[in-house]
Image 1 (cartoon, rainbow, N blue to C red):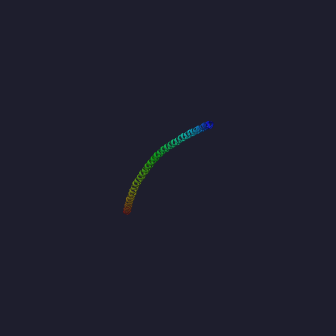
Image 2 (image 1 turned 180 degrees about the horizontal axis):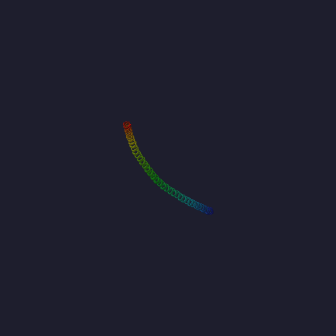
Image 3 (image 1 turned 90 degrees about the horizontal axis):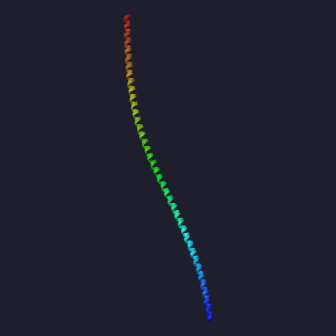
Amino acid sequence: MQEILEQWEEEKSEREREHENVLMEMRQKVATLQAQQEEERTRFENAKREVLLEMQNEKRALSETLLQTQGELSRACQQIQQLRQEAKEQQEKGQTIEAKLQAELEEAQSEIQEMQKRHKKELQGTKEEMNLLLEQREALQKQVS
């Protein structure tokens, strides 16, 4: 019985060693898996940071482009507004000049009509005077003859 006990103790010890070896192997595998998992997590975090940084850079670049575009649009709107104002002023100026020229034309036409009337009257007067002189000449010629 002593022998069986010793043999049993030996087997028990050997099984414990085997279990400890298996346990040690399992712990090493777990540690390896944990290290791999930690490495993967670190790589994932680094990749995630890189993607976020890239997105922030793109967002910043887009914001700068947007601001630049808004500035250009603002300047273009101001230029358009200025051009519209200038066109309006030119149009008003043109209308003023046209009205002035129209008034001058009407005044000149009125003066021409007045001059034509005067010349017509003067011509009429001259014709009457010529007729009178012709009559006087005829009368004088009759007296002379």
